[in-house]
Length: 335
View 1 (cartoon, rainbow, N blue to C red):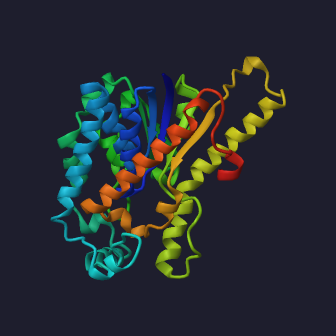
View 2 (cartoon, rainbow, N blue to C red):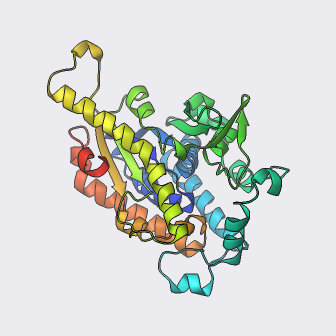
């Protein structure tokens, strides 16, 4: 058995791809998961896995993940946000021509959720509460780190495993143009993706395993040159949400080069970390940015299947490399 840690990105309903990855990893008893660092949808998936593990081991985690994503897909059938015939005629699974999507895009540029939703109602809270027993996270064998953005300081707050609550996961998932900031201990928080999508350093410094597996949901490249105003804005967001991971990968690559050159003293106790990635860049780069709000069952199933296939291919190709070497070239992928 080989032990890994997981870095799970956010990305709306694209998190169903991560669900597929996790389901495949949990099905392989050669893999043990020590810790997870998650942001937004990655934090939700991490909380589902950690809670499920405490309730029923691997099978319990798989059941809880399935229950959440199927519930989300079922709820979407009644949502007013549906793909139009024009959306379906185009590739990318987007909802950009939906009247509801267009209305929300226009209104949220003029009015904040403090005006549109004065009662602060968040449907995600009820959904999480119906599935996750947050008290069980403290007893889970999988340690969960969750990142959120401190609104006032602009800094990342990484919540430790014993600090993760329902509010923490909601804070990590809070898109400020759609949902009011989540207050925790007198501080206001937004989506963690702005500053850590996700944070890698908790896995490097607070876990024993040397293997960090990044489940990459936001495409790094592969997008066509954006020319429409909407596409430019969405590409800016993608670049911003990947920037924090790129910075941390740059630092790890630099430390590795110093260690290889013998410039780091043994007493510094700098541990060699191996970096791995599970992704489907071609699929994700082909999805329209608005598809992150598409939760129709067929799309969730497609993402889940893609995740299981990507994880299966990665295991077949790289299981023997775990514990020995990184399976991606950090300089090529991130720098």
